[in-house]
Structures are given as structure tokens and as C-alpha cells.
Image (tube, rainbow over all chains, first blue to last red; front, side):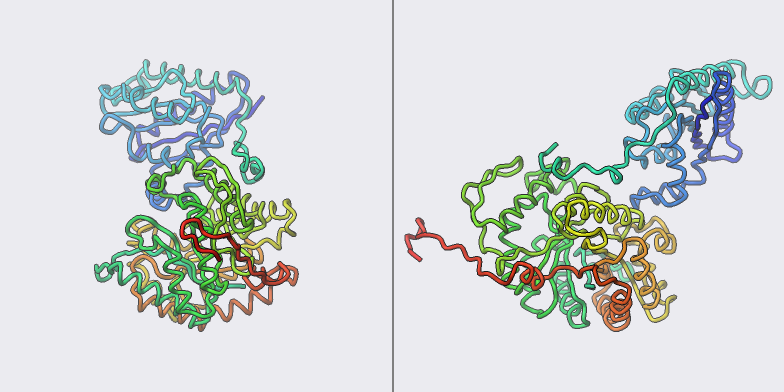
Length: 206
Length: 376
């Protein structure tokens, strides 16, 4: 049994927020799916709301402060990421984008990601595929095929959740667990300070 | 240990008055600041090089040549000289001439420059930043060390039988530092040649400084120039002082809040804890600066940034008085007491001449000039 680390990024602004609620549902489903496949999981959740000022500061100073650095390391070091944003003006929220803007551009390469979003109306649902998916394609992450979108009406079913939404959550969580389960545990990228390119190689232009 | 100041040469409005100095005022002020640095007993003055507004320092050797004529003991340096966009042939010529005019009171610091648009103005591309720094510096070294150079590389036209004139003063090229915030290749470059490594150590968390210096020291030893703790390290630092700490904070806050690099972001207090910025009494500056040694080891040069963000000249000169009277004398004594005997001082022209076995006239005699027909 391997213990997988799951980082959950929630960009909801309210407390409580439907974005966080969806993130929690996805997390529970993913942990269950991993367990059913024989893996254990630890979960760390990054609420971007509490890093709103840290993120603005990072944009201006070019470095994350200590609190934000911890959040970044949580996400970049995880075996898989669940990323959930509210949809604003037909796309992810600015806060959500800012977090991924300040990551090192190689930080999520090959990382399995479950994409999810919330909005007041189902008319925003394609934002998942038109906005989030290209962003994670650019980052060369590996989003699972099912994205999970929840509009206000999806929370109206039995147990506060619509049957169709529950199915999408299960399917997406299963896909994420399948991708993660087939991989070795996350390894951090090589440290260029521990193992620098020898200068003779730089001189040769290689 | 050497103490001094470095400037980025920005022309920034004073946020407390809304007035922006003219370029003429800023350039004159920078001469006044350099002369004052010598007067209050500092060792080094370094200027940045920039080719876009709001900066005025496009031609450092013109400026440093003038300062050399107005000073007697001040060591003149750069922070940094753009090894990427300057032709290394021109750097070799300009700084060798400056070295002669300044009687050897010259060293320089190589940097890449981080402003993408500047590169194409000089025929280059920022994506080649590291390869340019590597190739151009390798050529620069040869131009100063070999009288006649045949050379071919990737980034400039080949040289056939080229002699860079004047030859370095006393046959000894200026000492070179390499500055970089977080590119391990540049720490590697400094280590490979046994040159100095300078970390700007302003605007960034100390962890950047620490891991770059650690890498440089380790590789300096690897390349056989001495033990890791004998490598030549310089640091920047940013300070603002008043006798009373709260007065310093109150006076500096509007400059901080509106500063071009970090303004409108973190608070002065947050930035002071996240970066080496120290705003307070001279005693606080002394304590913070002595603490740098805890994460880089014994080092050879400390430069302070004191004249940016629109601070008026009068205030900058008062900062220099405080540095010269209250801060640097204590730091000199304390650092000297802490430094083990086997850790060297930063090389100077005099020490490099001594190492080379004495001064040699390096003049290259040439045959009659085919252009003028004059014989020598």
C-alpha cells in the first residue's frame, strides 16, 4: 500500500462556499477511490482566499512569502491535485489564475489533476473545458477526462446533492485514482543547486 | 572587509512632494553621492547599468571616469555591467582605460540584465542570457590576458589578430565579480574562474542569497581555488536610518509604499522581515548586517542601497553620514574580530599586482600604422 498525497486547491470566496463544498465532495470520493484500489491518502487543502494578499504581494515582489510558499510546496509536491474554482465572467476566478500564475512554469508537469468548477447557473458549465483545460494543458499537467461542474440547482437533490452530480463526482474521482494508482509516488524535480551543470559543459554550449 | 554603496540610478518622483528630479539633477546627485561616500570613509562605490527610462546610467565608464578624477581612494565598481548586451571587446577596452585613469581603483561586476526588450536593442535575445554571459565573459578574459587574440564564437563577429587597447594597467586585469539572484550557472561561472560572487541581497528573501553563496563556495573549492570559506563573496543590503528607529520608519514609509520595485504590495514591516531591508536606528542596521554572516559565512564586501525610490539628495547624504560615522566603523571592527586569519580580503589592484610578482608595463608595440603611415 502506497500513501498518496492529495492537494486540494479551492478558490471559493464565501464562508462556507459551494466551491469548497464541491472540493470536499471530490476529496472524499477520491480518497475512497484510492482506498478501494489499495492505496492510502493524505489530504492537504489550500484555501486561496486566505492567500489573497500573499498572491497580490507575490505578483509585485516576485517571490512568495512564507505562508504562500507553504501552500505552493503543498501543491507542487503532491501526487495529485484537485483544483476547484468559481466561474466568474465565463472563466476561472482571478484569484485561482493568480495562484497558477505564480507557480514555477514546470511545477505541475505530469501532475494528475481533477478540474472542477461552480457557478450560479449551468450556462457556465463549458468554462471547464474552454478555460480550465487549456490552462492545465499549458502547464503540461494531466487533467482527468471528467471535469465536474456544479451549478446552484445541482445542490438541490437528496442529501443536498443531485444524483447526476454525485455520479460525476464518483466518475472523476475514479479517473483520478486510476491515474495516480498507476504511478510511482511523486518525486521532486532535480535540484540545480545540489547538482549544477559543470562549467565546462556551459562553455561548450551544451 | 570593504564597505560601500551601490546605486541603480533611477529617476523616481519623490512621493512626499510629487516632484521628479531632472536627469541632469540625478546625474549630478550621483557624483555628489560618490564623493560623499569617499569623504565619510567608505571603500566602494558601484553603479548599475541601464538602457531605458527611468534610469540614467547608460554609460558607466563615462561616469566612473569623471568620479575617478574627483576622488582619491574610492574603489569604483559596477552593479552590474551587462555582459550579455555589451560587446565584450568594448568592455575590455572601456574598463582597461578606466583602470589606467583611476590608478587601478576599479573592479567590475558582471550581470545579465533582466529586461527582455533591452536585448534586441543591442542585437541580442534574452533567451540566450546564460550562453551570452558564458561566451562573452570567456572572450573578455582572453582580451585582457592575451595581447593578440584569434577568436570565433556564436554571438559576435570573429576576431583575427585582435589586440584590445590599452592593455590592463600594470599587466593586471581588474578583479571581476559575478552577480546573480538565482541562476546557479552564474555561481558556477564565478567559481570556475575563481572570481568573486556578489548577491544583490535586496528585494529578495535571504534563502536566495544563501543557496547561491553556498553553491558558489562549494564549487570554488571544487575548482581548486581554495577552501570554500576562502571564496570571495559580496552582498548588497538596503537600509534607511535615523537616530530614533520610529523616525526612520515614519520617514521612509511613503518612499517604501510607492517604491518602483515592491511598492503597493507588502507592508514595510512585512518586507523587512521577508528581505534584508532594515529601517531603523544605526544600531539595528549594525545588528542586522552582522547577522548576514550567519547565513553566508565570512564575506569580503558589503554594499548598501541608500539612494533609490525618490529619496532626496539631502536625505541620502545624511544616510551616508550615519553609515560613515556610526555604522561602518563598528561593522569593520566586529567583522574583523570574527574573521579567521585564513579568510582573505577581496582582491584589489595592489594585491593582484603583488600576486602577479609586481607591475609590468603591458604596452603592445605595433608597427607603422598603415592608415597614417607614421612610424613609431
